[in-house]
Structures are given as C-alpha cells and as structure tokens.
Image 1: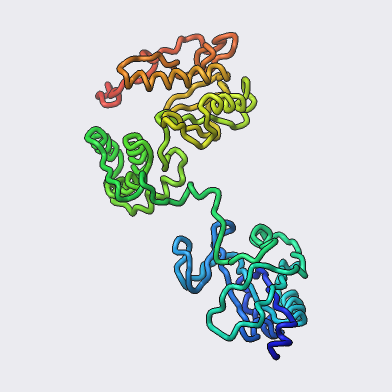
Image 2 (image 1 turned 180 degrees about the horizontal axis):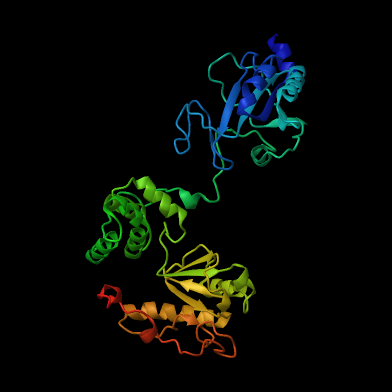
Amino acid sequence: MSSDSASASGRYKLVFFVPHSHLEACKEAIFATGAGTFPGGKYTKCCFQMPGQGQFLPSDEANPAIGAAGALEMVEEMKVEVMCFGRSIMLQAVDALIKAHPYEEVAYEVYKLEDCCSPPPPSTHIPSLPPAMASKFFPAVPRVGRQFFQRAPKTQCRPFSAGPQRCSDSLSVHRNKPTNNPSIPFTFNEQNQRLIDEILKRYPPQYKKAAVMPLLDLGQRQHGFTSISVMNEVARLLEMPPMRVYEVATFYTMYNREPVGKYFVQLCTTTPCQLGGCGSTKILEAIEEHLGITAGHTTEDGLFTLLEVECLGACVNAPMVQINDDYYEDLTPESMKTLLTALKESATATDAGKTVKVPAPGPMSGRDTCENSAGLTNLKNPVWDPETMMRKDGALDQPQQQ
C-alpha cells in the first residue's frame, strides 16, 4: 500500500476490554484482518491492577508504586488498543472482535485520528499520536463492566499508562513530607517505656507483636499523630516487619497519620445523630461557622481539627461529638459554640498560667448519663454503688477461703 493511498484511508484506534482467557484469540482474530500490521502500526496492552488505582504498561516506564517494569499483574480484564490503517480494515477488525469476544455485548470504541502528513517509518518506538480526533464512528455498547464503563475515554485520546488519583489515597499511601518522613527520629519517652514493659507482659514473648495496637496508640499520644517514624519504632520494638505495622495503622481510623490540632473534634453524622435532638447537621454548621473551617481541615492556630465520623456509640444522647478522649452529648448549636470557646480560652490561658473552667464531658443538657426526661425510673433498688458492688483490684490474688 502506497503512502498516498494510506494517508487517504485514515488511521483508526480500536479500544476494548477482554478477559485473560480470550486475549490471544481476540488478538489473532483482529490481526488476521490486517489491523496493527501496517508500517508504523502499534499494538499495546495496558494492565489495570484495580479499578481506579492506576495502570502501567508491562514494558518501559512502569509505575514502581504499582508494579515493576515488565511485570503483568493478574487482573480481571486487559485493556487492548489496536491501530487500524484504513476504514475497511477497521470495520473488519470490529467484526472479528465481536465474533471472537466471549461477551454477548462487546464494549469497544473506535476513534478516527488525525494524520501527521504521512505514516511514521517502521520503528520499535512510535511517538505518541496527536490527541485530537475528528469523529467517533462506533459508540460504546454498555455492559456490566465497571472498568470500561468508568474509565473509557470520552472526548480525547489520553495515555493509558497514566491513571487518576484515588479519592482514598490518604488512607493507604504514604508520601514523605517535611513533618512526616523516616529521617525524623522518634523514641518513646521514659514514662511510655515503662508502660510498654507492662503491656508486653500481657503477651507471650513469641506473640508480642499482638501489642502493635496499644503501642501505636502510645506513640500517637506522645508524638501527636502516627507518623512513619512512630510506626518504624513500633516495628523495631516488636521485632516485626514494618509493613505489618503499616497495615494496622492504615486500616484503623483511630490512628491519625497526619498532624491534627490540639483538640481533635470528631462529629458523628450517622443517622441517629442526624435525627436526635436538633440534628448533627446543625451542629456541623455551628462548628464550621465558629471555627471558620470545614470537615477535614485544621484551624490556622493549630488548635482544632474537625472531622466527620461514623457512629461513636452514644446514640441515646444524640447529637454528640468526641473531642480527644471525651464525649460531649445532647448538643445544641449554642452549647457547641460555648464548648469550643471554653476550650480555646483554656488553651490560651494555660500558656499564660491561668485556668479556665471547661464544661465537663457528658450530656450538655443537665441530665445525668442517659436517663430520660423524667429522671431515673428503674433500677432504683438496690442503689448502684461502685464502692460496694465492684470488685477491688487484687481481690483475685487473695487466697480463697475453703
């Protein structure tokens, strides 16, 4: 085929997904039509590790955060891109794909690409084609395939070796920062070292790695958040691979892997708190108005960090908020603002050597615990008294009388 006729015929890109089991069959059927075999033709495979987590080419320039260069991860489907030279070959390639594909409805797209004067010469490396496209001949046939439906290109040709950033990136991925990187030293202070010794006595020596959660909590309380240095120190003390510690710290939301304010405000916005009292929506609005921040952010003075969380287990006293280790319940917008003001004044007064009275944790409405509006109506007799009804420390160590 001459270059003149080739240029007149146009170039097309066929993109589709296929399971591993039928990859070779579809490829051979499409190649039999002449697709991907013209001078300068190109056949590539792009591997998706998981939907939305990114992708990499199993050749050069692989993303080391996902897979090594030349590696091919086992995934549900492969994304295939084949260049077709000429409209007739493109139509034959589509027919061959439909016949060889295992799905009854095949999801595919075909793009007509702008030519660059003439086809490029044969080479092992073909420069990227212009991103513009003149028209789309075949609309995608939708099927229940989340990878193609969510990631198929719509209005332009983009490189398949680049993936979008995940919304949940902060939950599982560490990025070195000036305040959080392995070069920042961390060691437990003397008091926490004694606590660690007491904690490790609870576990057999060969199972001391089970203490990873309380030690991470100790590190967070000392350092202010669970940094990568805290996790590495816990791994060293427990003689376990650092990755095992990272897995725990990234799984449980109780570990803050980024710095938080002196007062960590966690507002429950689950259904009971949405419906109880004035509703958590009004409490959230009051906090945002008073602090001047939205959920997920920290005030400029570093005193408050606000976060929306799921149920904290105080549904009967909804709406409620957890600030550090304390629960404040039966909230109203006014009582919430009063509490935040008292906490801020307490922080500044402590620096100046003064004291400010902060409302006690618990219901802010004046009721005791979670009793109803009429007061305590049951379990009155006998009167519950922890001094007489709870076992004393060390009671089980005393010799039993026969």
